Image (cartoon, rainbow, N blue to C red; front, side, top):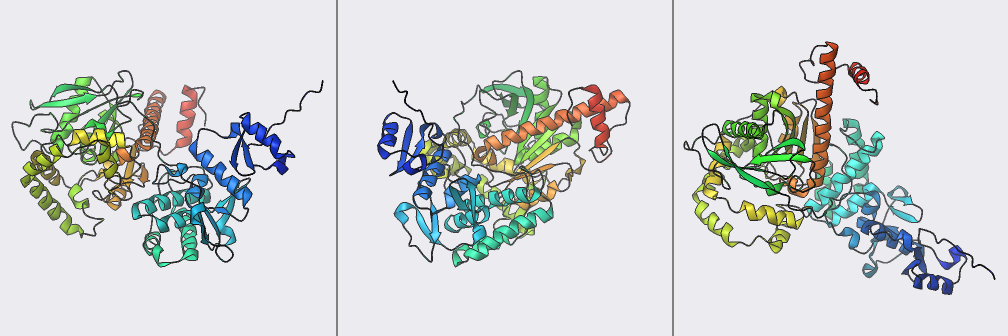
Length: 559
């Protein structure tokens, strides 16, 4: 009896002619579950149809190109193929998008096909059977049709990817000026080829100098994370004020101290509260906010008072030293803590904030001159304090469930990157404020002037939002220049980066902790070898010597 010949279908879309089979044979394979029919006459092996929506999207695009070779995958499809970040988290579930040469074909919107003129270098083949528009052309095409925040997400991601390619690396910690210029030039050339009045605002942004930080590729994930075993407890500050402190459910992890934004609840940090968080995380609610008592002396709400509260919390938990994660107002507190107690700060992760002079950074995106920013900010805070009663009533009556979260994600205050469940949990706690006191805290913050951050010696990571409407990104990057050893990140987000990019910030925290441990190991190695401490600039000049010291202490050390 003859044994049937088994054949293995390709992992890319194919036709009957490609494999030398009849359509009846392929249809039987579809019925048996070995093949998937992507479109009439086009098939793919079932094993290639993974659960990943992005891969499924690209296979559908390849099937369309196999059927109509003149198609060029574009816009969201090309962005997914290149790994560009997209503001729409559901882009992979949409139908593939294509371009054809506008001189020869007509647009077919129902098929996701549009006309477009492009040069030869506007088209690349990212894998066999998948021809897409280039990174630069893809970003320009998306930006020309999207709202400004969505356009900036695409352009920001494209510039970073192009800079990494110019630099010859998969990832970049910093981008030299020549690399930035080359990346922006490629994007601008693509913009010039497309032209059109609709691209004017994009052109204006591209032609301004840009700062690049680490490469950010891929859309943010929206995994389901448990709420975490958050524990609240009373903390008695140095002046006797009772505060509400909190910690996550991890008791044996490395310590992380959160210096939160003004009146912000712990729900702003969903990954730090998750059941599987590897760090022992703790923080406190500011004086008079969210369950904490107001101090007997109502003037004791300055940044120095908040820093003293941070020390009290560390003492209560028995922490000698911790990595500090800070957001907005908390950045002021973290740098004050590092100035007063440098031996207790192992590392500092600064998110969307400056060390001091916060009110001087307000209204920069609205083009308010710097001398007017602080007076305007103080006026707004005083008005908020006067209207606090009405704001309290409004906050209690506005629902903060999923519909509110979805609305907030599309207002520009928070970008669609953020998970609606995270927004809902944060907003539900945030609205419990007494907004009269909230703006009292804001007025106290206005009294904290500029701080020169160059004194910081510990590892520092600084994160800014490219479209932050509260804290000027240019001011964040300006203070970062005063810390030569700082690692600087620019995320395509607003002021609410902890909610928009929780996974990215967790990655930065892990990297910061690794750098802090490296510093501690180097210091220990130098002490054993009888070598003097680091130079006054904070970072060690002779890296080769440091590696030799570590190699002596650890035989498994790899250069």
